[in-house]
Length: 112
Length: 115
Image (cartoon, rainbow over all chains, first blue to last red):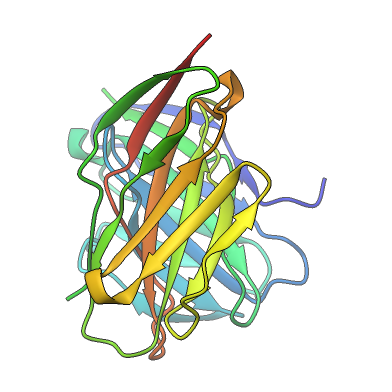
């Protein structure tokens, strides 16, 4: 499988708990993006990496959110002290140079 | 600020009908890129097309065609002879050509093709 892989596919957590999602991009892609999508809305940009450097962060990315891409390969997105408003689909995408972004199937987070 | 408007929230058509999905964008950039993505019920966003702001040629790919008009800031998508497998949510998106790689998406149009 050469597509973008995200794990887990689904996560249910209690409010206040920390969660971490993983994204494995397409291997030759040096750009990696995180987006969040709530029901009935289009994806909203969260952050972007070029190799291991985090180059852009949205104002949506509060201090409870942190993303890493330590070796320029896979990435993790951690949400600390989850709130019900964090319930959403978290989408990862990867790309190379000026190509389009290819998306994974997403991680659906439910905070109860 | 960039903005993408997809005014049609939901569209239903009978199989084999043609359907056009509208997309209007706003940007101050002179160089930018426009995209269409398809999101089937499985959830994965599937890339359909990318168009840069300097290329106003319309494009056709099988049953799909795209009409880019800078004068009206529109990038509309037409499916000819629709099929049930075309049922999905379709998103139009915009990216600046000036260094930012983030995509700004519209709210999407849900297309239902009825057999």
